[in-house]
Image (tube, rainbow, N blue to C red; front, side, top):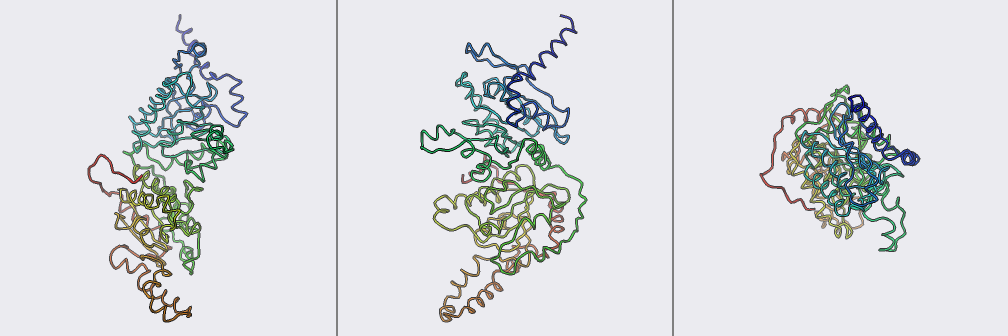
Length: 516
């Protein structure tokens, strides 16, 4: 065969691979509001940057009927390209070929790009749209999943791993995304569950739809599996690119800097007025965050899950930072089981990937009650404590109002290696709030003044003056400075600059034993 014919044959084979699912199945995918696997890669990555691996791979299933049908790519597109000019590795499951089901050869393709991502130090993005294991391959398919899970675990904290759920993701397949750092879903077309509605009906007699069982809304607000949810695939790709802009290439790199045009010394006098005079009145912590960060731009993660705590990314003087903040508008900003788990996972991600942590604190304590105790508030609260104490990245805390009891200790206090701990004049740092404290400290005075409502209020003011203020902690060096709220942005930026060369470490060990 001449060279020209060989080149023509190559072009023909590649064109066949690009349409391997067939035009009818591709049209069906489009009719559902979904792109094909290849279209997704092209839309996600920078134009013209994708380089494909293993286009000519086919399955090795011995089933006779399967032997007659061996489409190229075997149902998954793999390779590398760039996002914002930065190298990434990607795999994209192709629902138009065997419903995107995973075979041994398919899994080997994914494992190859996972290993390459770890080897060169670049993020891994997985686009999931699959019916699950390829039944005809039996245990080989299960082995393929386990091979992927192992790499997810080994490379966790080595390179960022991001999962897009753009169709079904069921059974054992859900565990790969669950191990990755971020899960993005699309409304109405993506879902995740271990067992489908039919099995649930058989076992528990529950009637539940696919959407109710594992849709994006469920995982964004109830299970916490989904970090971000978007209306369609285009919005999802845009969201991923925005998320990517805050992340480093690997644990050996620093997060990407951006030029900052927002004045470093920008003062916001509105912050001097934002805390209500009544300490029991709520306010929106997000207003404080957005006023302080570059260009008022805050990228919230897990917004619908455990909303009493806020986590997300922003920039200060162009440098990415991770934000953790209590939200007084929801449950008074109290720490409960879900909030503790949500914040702990985020803190550990930031620490793994060299992203400094900024904590805005207004916490009345841990949520009391049998429900919280029975569901492990001791164990789950300890996760957040563990995460902050273990973290070696720069940690800066601003106490804006309440910092009571054990929750004060947990929220990146000086005692668990907080680097710079600031407080606003409105801060109340104490073992407990004035209402409970005066009942204990001034019990005799209250007993003698029975019926005198003013007396309790006077004693609460005395308690605040003596204990529940920032100056008592500042006298002991637990608070580095009490600052004017309007100057918070500049103080944070200066602290970050000072901490830029911070070096901290933990004792040598195989790994710790976080209270899972």
